Structure formats: C-alpha cells, structure tokens
Length: 319
Image (cartoon, rainbow, N blue to C red; front, side, top):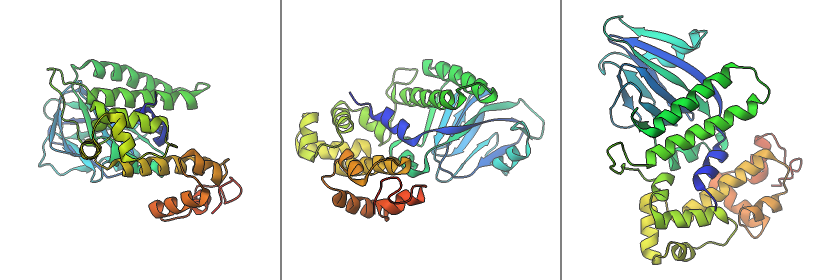
C-alpha cells in the first residue's frame, strides 16, 4: 500500500545538512529569518524559549524541535524582551558553525542542530501539508531515536566516506519520518496531540487516511469525490467536509496539487516525453495536462522544464 508521508518526503528531497551550535548565557536572543528550509535541533543543556513559528514555546533539556519552512522566521531566547542577534550572520562568521551569545551570567543553554534544504519545485508542499513545527519532549521514546539519528547525521556529515551522498539524505529522511510519527502520536501522558490540518491530520483520521492511501497508490485513476468517499465508506458530502477539515483542502484540490507536484518532479529530472508524464499523473492527453499545468503554475510544461535545466525537446518535455 502506498504511504503518503513517504511519498511527500521523497518528493521534497531533503539535502544539504548544515550543523550548527548555539550557546547562550544570561540575557540573549538569536533570530533566524523566514525561508523554505527545515530547521531541526535538540536542547542539549539548559532551557530557553522559542518565539515565532506558532505560539511561544518553552524548551527544556532533551527536547527536540523541527520547524518547517517558517514564513515569518523564529527566535530562540532566554528573555523575550532582549533584542535578537542575527543568527545567520553570527554562524556565517564562525568557522565551526558554533556561536556563544549573552552576557555570560546564569546557567547556559546549548542548542545543537542544523537545517536542510528541499527541492524548491515543491517546497510549497511543506507549508501546505506539514505542521509548522514539531516539538517532542525529551522523555518521549521517539526523541531518543531521533537523538541517535542526529549523532549519525553529524558523523556522516563530518566524514568523507564513499557513498556519503546517498547515506546522508536517507538518514535525514528517516529523521523526518521519526519526527512526524512522534508528532502524530500521543503525548507522554497518553493524550492525543492536537494535530493541525495537513497530511498528518488526514492520516490521523482512519476514513480520510484510507482515501489518501488509495489516491497515492493510483494517482492515474480518474478519481472523483464519490469514488474517494466510497473508499472511506462515507457519504459524499460527509467525506468532502471531513477531508477538508482534516487535510485543509478539498479532495479534488489535493489530487490536482499532488498530480502537478509529481509532474514538476518528472519535468525537473528530464528523460520523459510530455505524453508519458501526462499519462503518468492521470491525464488522458498531453494537451489536457498542459492546460492543467499552466493553470496551476502559470507556465507551460516546456517552459518549466527549460527553467529547471532541460530545454523543451531535449528532456522530452514539449510545450
């Protein structure tokens, strides 16, 4: 059976992991700007606040944090009223990507983590389908597994071993799956988490999850709301309302977005004709696909392929 979460992670292609370490003492604050990357980290000592990327959050030693494509940036701070230093500028000037901030008083806080980039073609899927942030407490079983993966990621990134270009992205993908699994599971007290609308919200609801699995397993099928509702064993109207509430978009909007995302990935890689891409994502003809692609992205498939490095005709993608 298809796994929608695996499909999404494979499509966004996490890569280019950059390790960083921040140590703050006393009054301090460090801000990071908006971006399409994913920031991850663990509080290895002390505590601090996360400001932005959602409501204010208190972080304690052992906690794990994942922030997906923050639209407004975020700040780590000991004191919310302290003017924040530019985190990117500080780390850029540090040869070992480690910085110390604050006035040197009080107990220190140490954050260890990094960030990775995703394929820009489908970076928008992060904001649409993934939670803005994932916070796992240090006592949770998933956090311990993630800590082990972070050690492996750090070791692989620092070494110069054959095959590192293959191993490192796989480790990052596994870490992402573990983090998102933990976010969808109950908290340490056994209470269900409040999962916001998105892919995890849909997968946490069995009828909607059944429809998502079926859609991902056969994206070429001429799906309708009625057909997906039948998979979910619900009436058409109830299913449509429930899907929109859990996923944040209608079933047909989700199907269109997923088909176009797969097409953009295929166009970016090259090597397929426009007919093959069209039929691969569920369109009966290249012209029907081209019209849908242009309406959704604002450009023709051939122009999009040329912009990704494959001129129309060379990679098989026509206009």
